[in-house]
Image 1 (tube, rainbow, N blue to C red):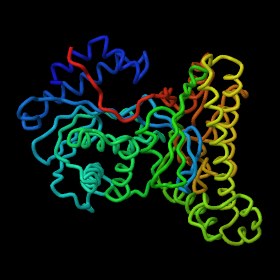
Image 2: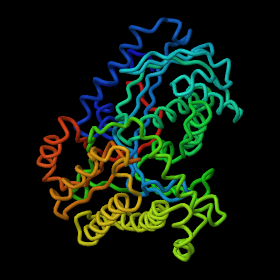
Image 3: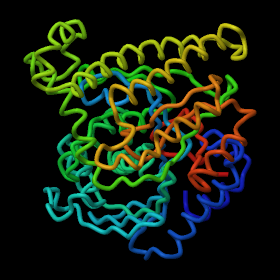
Image 4: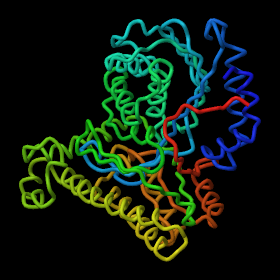
Length: 448
């Protein structure tokens, strides 16, 4: 579509249906304004050279953030994870160019310009958006895919530093843009996720796993088994907490994330140290019984905390299977308020609580030992448990040590929960999440 056609479409009933499916009924008007602003700014501020010489066609792409439902710190040891895409997304309005230059503008960030005629790693770009774009283009080229230039105006609503995978959403977004503009857009979600991960690992310089990109790209709730990390097994699940009377949300404790890299790095390192004791590369190759038979030697070697973290891994892997079974039962029940569905939801919430307790007690990622006076996550969990009184669940969300918790709140008590938590952690610290069924996508806008 041209810019004018898109602006007209955004006012239509069809657009309202699309925005409702992506963002919920209460997100329709805000989405109209957001999308209109992106198109209008692209038309007004970008030079004519940024548009195709023949048509001025604009294309629109969206990638959701993700929330972790189960499997805290398991993926890096080839474990199992439950995750779900959410309504908070990265959107880009894109114009294809006739050269190899990229112009990328995103609200709240500096403009990015680069030429992808050079697809080699640029050391000075590591840690920057340029590295992600160049890395994605390079990985596509390595897969014998044509790549070229584009200009994009973007808006990323995935909260940074919240464990919702803002950077992974952007990586998958770039992969989808290149693939759709130059290769027909036929690559599946998992391949786009792998391309994004490779760019982050090699070009951006961050040794991340594949979980974040896979969850963002896939859409809906998904179980991911990383036994083979290069080819994880995915299983989609139809899950909507609201249908069972609960609201899924995260609470940002606004604790500092600085100097936490050693805390994060120690978790996979200590788990792998336990595996290495037995000649294995990861805990997935080990079993809990073997670990338990050598506790005396392990305490002298990798140490007590490493043993506890390994025990968390084994327990969390089992919980993911049990959580998946509960969610599948809920999905099979047409009446989500029926006894069977409610019983399965109660079981799922109990497992969420167990996951949180295991993270607190065994994984020990609730606060940093370098700063024991700052325990925002522990405080948020304690307040949430006291508020819920067993009628819901909460757990640490994402990497831990600082940042966010996740909570399932009975829908009729949401306002009271927000009032309590924002009274302690500040206005706007509670974000309500909605599970979005679609993953990475180029939005289809039929001409009116």
